[in-house]
Length: 235
Image (tube, rainbow, N blue to C red; front, side, top):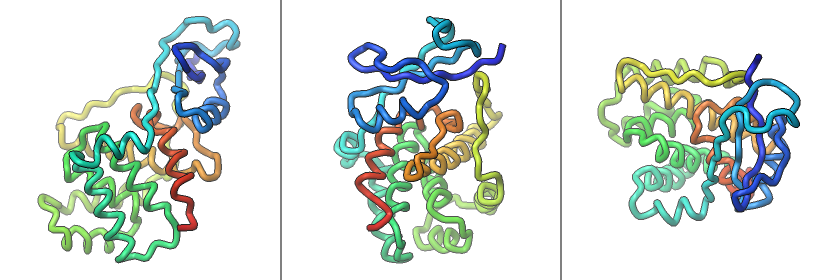
């Protein structure tokens, strides 16, 4: 039978929401309750009341924006990089909304969780904020980012011209390991890029959890709601 993901909410070590293949009730609970944690159960497609404990339950502890900043601000390269870009990019490009702020925080959090190299962090920042290679080339030169190559620009061009929609997973995900660690990082950056695009749909209440490809992205749902609240598009 086809495997499907069901969602619930864990609080005080108890499930407080019925299992459902519709992720909207779980997202609403996460949005309203800081202590809520996302629970996901992958099992065979069948009526929810017959699921019981078939499949594996995964709990995604939710990061809070305040906790992330307080814990990381004095030691995290990723967050320091985000703070620098928040100030510098606004001066250079005069953004008309706060989307770039939310984007840079999400990049910092996902880069931290995936332990991206500094270069991969730059790559994800630029990919997530811009869609213009000329602007990116200018910043790479100005910031004197080392080891940047034509391959990196080709990679970004492929991201920008490829599908803007992440795949929907209807069964257990396949874990792809590339032969070179270098290319594995690029693969993970591409996943994170798509996930950030999906998370930024929170303003329209259109985030679909089965489109998120990086497991760590499911840990950032509450932070994503906080970012939308603290940094609305009218700066």
